[in-house]
Amino acid sequence: MTGSNTVAVIGLGYIGLPTAAVLATHGADVVGVDTNHATVDAVNRGEVLFVEPELEISVAGAVSQGRLRADTKTPPADTYIVAVPTPFAEDYAADLTYIEAAADGIAEQLVGGELIILESTSPPGATQHMADRILRSRRDLSLDGTGGRPVIHVAHCPERVLPGRVMIELVTNDRIIGGLTRTAAERAKQLYQSFCQGEIMLTDAVTAEMAKLVENSYRDVNIAFANELSVISEQLGIDVWELIELANHHPRVDILQPGPGVGGHCIAVDPWFIVSAVPEHARLIRTAREVNDAKPQRVIERVLSKAERFRDPRIAVLGLSFKPDIDDLRESPARRITAELADRLPGASIAAVEPHIEALPPDLAGRANVVLTGFDEAVDGADIVVLLVDHDLFRRADRQRLRLHEKVVIDTRGVWRS
Ligand code: SAJ
Image (cartoon, rainbow, N blue to C red; front, side, top):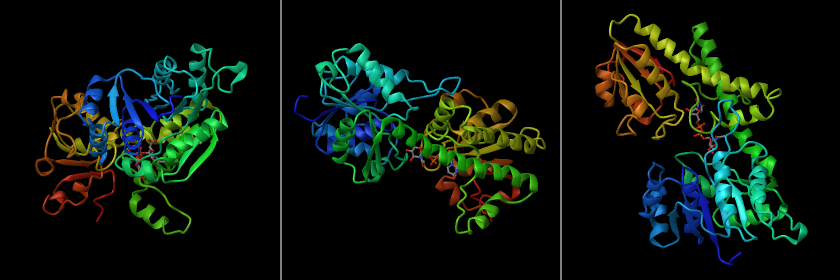
């Protein structure tokens, strides 16, 4: 330990950068580390390369006060926070390569006494795996002082913030910290207390890892229930949104909303880590994933059947992001639906409307029959209107003026029910 309060945050993405900025504005000296040179250069200019309310102002302030800088190399620090991606591999097992690379960079710098926190959403056992990897290359260190070797403190503190509300939720959400030792958990608690106003609860590392996965699986299972109801309702010829609204009047029923599928990098991914860890028992969690993953295909088939009556259909696709009022297109069902419609209907012209982006992502830009266009223009020229994301702009639309009653409308979010 140097006696100072230096923090290295490894991974300057949707979680790492906000965490780095918040720590810096609460008195820590923070170095953000990322392998991407463009990200590092942007942060050092006080800029942010993705949309998150209030983030850029916080980064710019911390950089101009000299509390935050970015680098491609991991520096020596008192505390390391690992916030790198944990994608899943072909077989749905978590890919820990990024965590391992971060651990290798940290291992070189350790002198003993440091705190290392894994924030990335991780499968059960990942925190121990990270510590084991560090200790394999640093046999002069230990977790508990055995053999008189200096101690490193390792803990898991999963992030639970909602994209679009990250800067608020980082401060107000409760946090779970799971230490490989009690001292590690307590040290991590001290750090988070510097900016977190929520309750901070201590446990062991595996329970903390599972808590995060369980939160997102809980939501996935509940969305799957709503999505299954939407398919059942379609077969029975009833309006699923009316059905859910009525059922939700019961004091102990609170069904979520169906949609074109579940997107984003969390809820569509994390449940697989549980399934992969205990496949024979995670039956409901697996089925929920399958139900939600099947939903985009159902939407595609519905559009294709409506398109049969037009020679070269003009289709307006409303929304490409994975949820409303953000610019995040990761794992977006809307994007997948748009791409497949373009492939299956080569003669169709598809006008995609996404008010939060300025250019189509490469997979869609490469398709000759898809253009990015304005809302009114797309709807005006369309035979079929497919609403995929409940952006505020679409919710507030004047349906009379847009003459939606003259078109085939497929509203996957139920925002245009009369
Ligand atoms: N969705 C529905 N119907 C609903 C609610 C959501 O179809 O009733 C869809 C959305 O359209 C979207 C997907 O689910 O495609 C996920 O959106 P979301 O808003 O439920 O969640 P995320 O992925 O933005 O953030 C989640 C949050 N977890 C929980 O609410 C339990 C957040 O707190 C986590 O920090 C985040 O995952 C994460 O990083 O793990």
